[in-house]
Length: 197
Image (cartoon, rainbow, N blue to C red):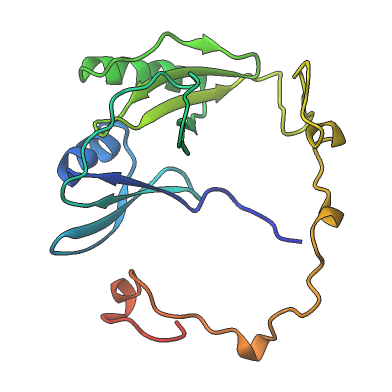
């Protein structure tokens, strides 16, 4: 069984990497841990936590999106509403609220969602972000909750994965046939892209 250890990275886009660095590294405190680039293209990574990163592509012509209230319904093609970053303590949540407001960013009131307390804002690229602190006495990871009055058919099956609904792997890739191809980033560690590394 596959064991996930977090979000390796979220990949976003910006037209202004320096402004993005000022926000994510210098205001929020996320370390800039990797940077790839060449004329017309950059890809930088910021450390969210021990296991999680957020990355930004910088492409010429990318413009900030107009702010949208997180969670408000839309119509038509759409794939992303917002991303929420967890913080360790309730004090961290209030510290972030104060820092964002002092820097001139619009920030929501602290909202009680029952299992988390959250604030909402937008980064300089218009990316809708939430910062959340888990309510100490409620852990939906240990005790899942389904409070939808009309849950979908599949949701009614419960929290645990239903492996049997997908085809079984009949012929796994043999170890000797597993090939890893070089891609952007391998030059960080090898000076040039190397096959199978």
